[in-house]
Length: 483
Ligand code: AHR
Image (cartoon, rainbow, N blue to C red; front, side, top):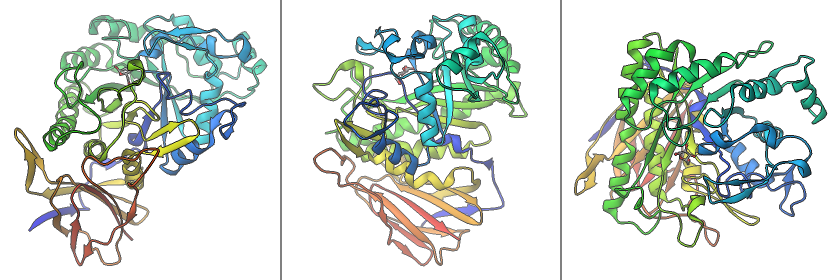
């Protein structure tokens, strides 16, 4: 029989809650309409933030939110987004859809959103088209309590106390939309910019350097060699495509089972990427002082027909639920190096957890995976070995079942996914007594999705625990808790 072996005596350490983080950019309808509608909107809101969306995000325990980009970050000038709304600068979002950005969502609004969500802010600042002074003054505006002109501006804008923002990104994709830099040049820029990002009071900035695109191992090598000692973390970006080119990424819905397995196998490549970038980091940082942050990940398909190509709006199916389960498993298995990850992007953009249309909201299958994995946040990772058959089609094969386990406050959580599009999986669990175990499940057809007319996919009680065996329906993600 296929088996899952849990060994509580072996652990890679604590699973950072920030591995379950999210990303929200000024892109399409992520911020505007998705998270923020403004105080005067007929859509119910609290200080401009959509009440339904905030409530749903709180339920999955969003630990950290990255903002304002993405590529937008290196075109963003923070002073355009503070002060009275009517005086805020209007610009054209040249990167994303050519629409007018009125800067009505700025620093104060972002931090209000984080406050409502109860999450940590992660601000990604502008290196590509910004100045060192601009970045330094943003940190001062956010974190200083001193009696300076910059701080007085914050007071005048209604905020007396510093926010104490900790997670600080110095540029985004500096190898591409963030300035097309070479790694040697960016390493020097990072050293220079971060020098002037001061720590104020007790708040110690966590300095995040722009890391590699996918498998650019040379970028990691050069950054770690030349700037490793100045950074707290290095980022990695990897998106899962189904199609073979950026012009043909594949459709988010209406795909074949071959496309399904191809996408999952590509998502599983995260294991190789994290392993190989970590190996390079290990050579320069054997103590694991520098974290790896995968601050953009997820499935990227062709936009929904009829939508603005620059808005990156796509549907989200059970295939995406599996992409999320596969990827989160990789991060948890590498929790001794991966300290944060941010799914792209929270609402209405790429692999969203939430879709909105006017005042309507839909929770995607990916949302439900984050719900099922929530208990792993801050848990002690437990060694988990799966002996599984393979599933797949054509050139695309992988293990049928994947699993992760952790322990927190005397409760053990096991999450298991059956990736098969058609076959049930019966698994014997070793090393965890399932007597008294409780379970929850998300399952559906491999191409099923929730939309505004009908939302058939949701988390349900799981009834497939039979003694020490788990009976998992095809295409399912299950959470088991014991204790
Ligand atoms: O998430 C969409 C875009 O993908 C981001 O703006 C950019 O950083 C990446 O290329």
